[in-house]
Length: 243
Image 1 (cartoon, rainbow, N blue to C red):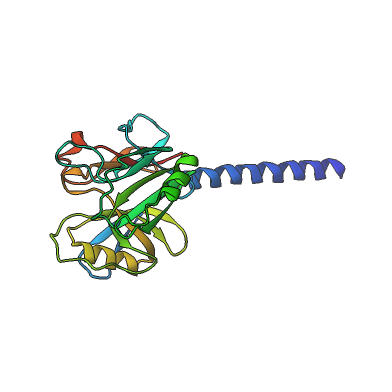
Image 2 (image 1 turned 120 degrees about the vertical axis):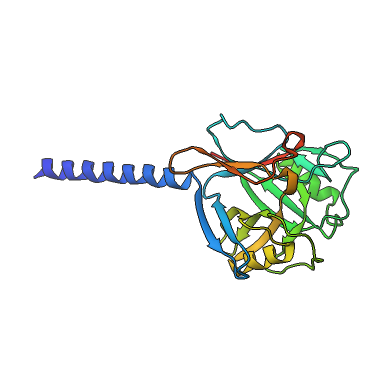
């Protein structure tokens, strides 16, 4: 009887261990799905971060690095000298402190593999104390367009139809990269994602700078993102999901 009990305990332990490994493998990879926007003007690819880490890089990530599961441009790149547009911090080191972009209303803070985004009110909230806190924690930050702020959409002027992409945090706390499959304007992009449950959304560089990629969670193959890629070689910064 004791022998049977020992065998049963070992079997249960092995089963639980296997389940833990399987569950860990799933949460430490991406989840990719497609949803239709309420406007009917575009479907959207949603790539969930899950338990992976988000980070900010100023050196081009290598597709051969198997720890990197997704890579997209983040902040805008200036057209005159091809540097990061606006103030940024990369892993505790600040740059462009004297070049705050007062036309960009949003910012994203990345610390310990997680992020939150907020309305900077066109740079007015980028105080020395905030920046010092990010630097001390070896975190990262960059400026971008604030698309959805705590469930509210800022006013957008009518603009061109083009492919859109952004970093989103849903009401349930999940973080994802979302890209439109069809060209839409900023208002449609934000309105559709709000209807899909996005609570906060910050834009990421697109147009000629839209190259990106992610690893297919089923087979590890590289899946290309974006359609133009015209300015790829001049890109100055990247957002990644990594193990």
